[in-house]
Image 1 (tube, rainbow, N blue to C red):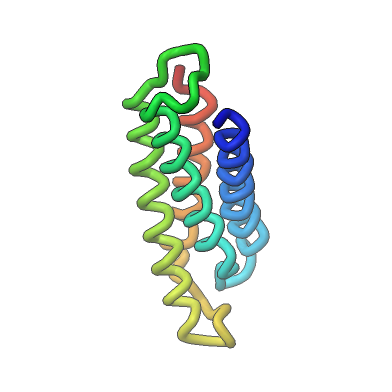
Image 2 (cartoon, rainbow, N blue to C red):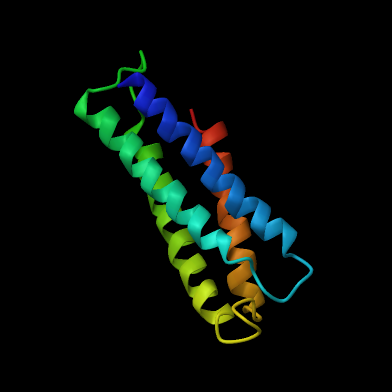
Length: 124
């Protein structure tokens, strides 16, 4: 089960990399890459699976897991996924699916992604 857990950790990292990379790559354009939503969904689902593996006892990391931290990360990831979905729908209305997205929506996705990464790294 530890191998499966590590696969989902890798998918989680790749998902967040797609979200942050897609946001950074589209900062100067009015749109947002459609892959940002898919990255957010990948990160959210893989995070939920990792949490389930930990809670079920199938994986033992050798230390107690901070459930408060994981809950905060889950809520932030859920908000990011919803915002990315809204941005995807908003962008789909123009220019072959890559139309303009409200700047507040776009930048909140980037900011919350950074918050989620900082929570993961610095919350002990």
